[in-house]
Length: 158
Image 1 (cartoon, rainbow, N blue to C red):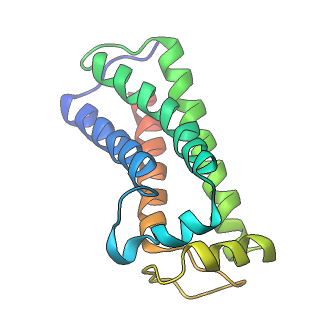
Image 2 (cartoon, rainbow, N blue to C red):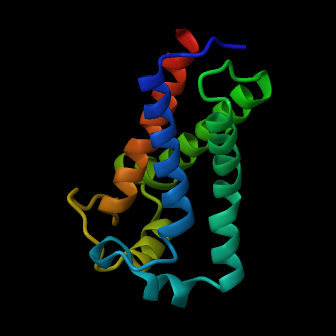
């Protein structure tokens, strides 16, 4: 078990986890202007698929957030440490596979075609490469997910 860390650091960690959970639960369900395209998502995905795509990552993230908050100021149990590492490790691997490898390294024409449909008209600040460009909302999520795992790494070293 790791030792508890400073209150400010714990608040930062909980804030990052909260941002991840909110993104996962809401980004495909509430209109965010130019940051998402709910109409395209609804046309492309069934309701069941949308629910599964929301809950599959959101549930472990929410459980991790809940128990991180419950253990605020205390040492995290080993199972919580493991849950957090697995959850955020899978997130980072998934975002690399889904976005950054096809964008930067190896084209994925099927994924690019899908993304061109479901992210049509969404705000982007990166140029298109290999038929795709990460939209702003997902890019912010990726930064937050990576920051969460960095803070988790630092937390484990304190």
